[in-house]
Amino acid sequence: MHSTQHTTRQPRRPAVGARRVTLAIAAISVALLLAGCGASAKPATSTSVAAIKDGGDLRAALTGEPDVLDPATSSIYTGAQVYEGIFSKLIDMDASGKFVPDLATKWTQTNPTTWTFTLLTNATFHNGEKFSSADVKYTFDRILNPKTASAYAGLYAQIDSIDATDPATVVFHLKGSFGPFLTNLATNGEIVNQKAIESSDPARKPVGTGPFEFVQWVQGNHIAVKKNPTYFKKGLPHLDSITYKFLPVDQSHIDALSAREIDWADAVPLQQVPTLKKDLRFTAVTSAVAGIPDFLAMNTKKAPFDNPKFRQAIALAINRSDIRDVAYLGTGELGLEEVPAGSPGYDKTGVFGATSDTAKAKQLLAEAGFPSGLSIEYLGLSQYPELLKTGQVVRDELKKIGVNMTIKAVDVSVWYDAFVAGNYQITSAYQERTIDPDNFYSLVIKSGGPINTGGYSNPAVDALIDKAAASGDNKERAALYTQIRTKMTSDAPLVFTHYETLNYLMNKNVTGSTITPTLSLHMENVGFTK
Image (cartoon, rainbow, N blue to C red):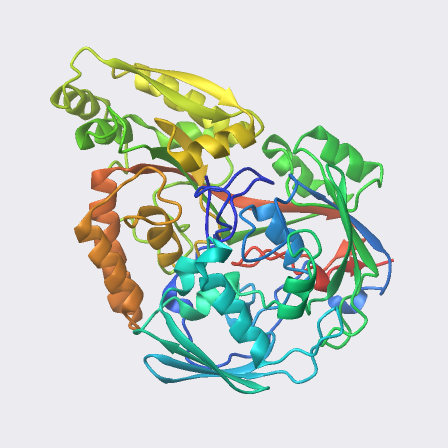
């Protein structure tokens, strides 16, 4: 279930909100909202860019296969990992969370509802079409068109109109003040070309202005891309090509790296992380403020989960330390909210069930009408061991309060269909790229949100979510999100269980890889040292 605005995480696993959302995670919060263009600092890398030797084919292992490569309709994080190297956005975000130029050279908020972007004049799409403001307007009009069925439409619902005033200038008119606007552009704002979309299959043959051009997709095996010789950023990309291989996260990843069958991997078995970080054959990259919040999703439309006291009992019965130790082998953070402890937006004040309380959980269970306990079913993902183990830990802890939870492990495609249709009682999910808290609450918690598959609805929470999104004051927004978390966690439509930190592993001769808040791979900065 993971969501964002960026895809479910099928690669690592399906995102929360389902695969329809390629959400995003990172944990930076609204402090990122800058009114003007920041310096174009590059993300911190594992080695000096000066050490990179241009050329070569990078063989990269991804934990899964994309659904589609159309940025407007992809809902799996693996899709984003690939297509973000094919497309460009107006603005991006560096490793520190600062907004930096991409297709826009500068941006200005002329009033609370108007943003003006000055665009590059030397960017070209892979089909030879020259990039202009018309492409920007088309991109967002297409996302907002109901016929597109884009999971990201909610991120841009505040757009009233877009004016392509001249080829190098585009003006966004919003319906009201909207705090997450720049963050949303930096996470889910890939610019497409109308001719490319309408003349071919955008799901299978993506055409962008990015550093790499699409070459081939061999279903079940790999996707190949090649260097864009007309890329607008001088000196990039370093690589001639990339072959994205679809591999499971197990010992085969490490064996393939050791045998030089692959050069880079987006994940490694958690039990090997401490050892691999010390292994001189490899370079490991991680981040303290970029990751993924995992949670238990409860279907509030199905008994007994339609009873708030029962959901509260579940929340209080869970020991997050046990989940981290058993399911994640001691890695990551105890999950209390949608952002990590290192985020400016982190505030565990008022979080219901922050610590386990078995006695109180038993009391609430009785008050919910189940003094003798009951049986429930957990929908598990057999391909994603951390999530399945989370279910096993929860099962053992619920036994202590008299709840018998059976686990039904299914294939990811079966899980996804059940999840989006609301055909489950309780399951594990996650949301990706929750850089701005609104990326989580508007999508997963708000009534009718595109990833609110559990049917939770609280008008008071909805009003707070709208108020926080409309505010341009960071202090006001932070206070509002504290109120939202207090009310939402008390209602317990879901329970945060863990905050995953990401780990990329590569052979020692690969450098330039970084983890940014948007979770974009930025393969244009990656290369070989020899």
